[in-house]
Image (cartoon, rainbow, N blue to C red; front, side, top):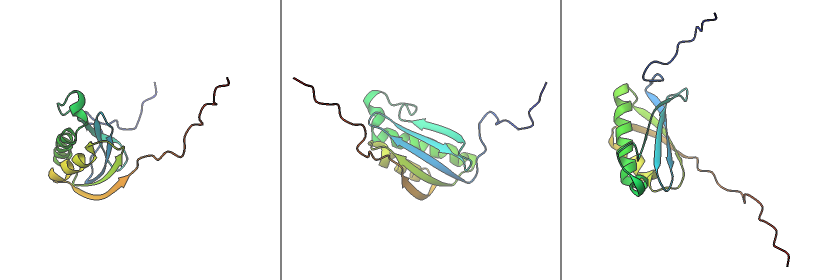
Amino acid sequence: MKTSTRKKAGKHGATVSSVGTIYIKATSNNTIITCANQKDQTIRQESGGSAGFKNSRKGTSEAAEVAAKRLGEYIKSRGMTTVVIKLNGAGQGREGAIRGLVVSGLTVTTLHDVTGVAHNGVKKKKRQRK
């Protein structure tokens, strides 16, 4: 039987360093905030729904701020102090999530907007013959 020499991640997942990356995906219905370490391993994920908001309130900036505060407090207790933020999407929760991370005491070094831009997309259907 072959045994693996690689150490698996513990109960709490990946190791936390002092610098990390926060991905914010803001849609019209919800805002998902994910924290990753320098190896891009996910440490924790929060959203408007996990913060206790339901239905249409999940997509608000208030829900994003509460979720970001919860995530910021967690990763700060694990030892992360400096973050790079990558924004994706055009939802209401973009500014609220950034505000929540700053209020929780994290130092934000850079903000990147990685929202995709359409380059004319799919070809239209042909006009129907009469």
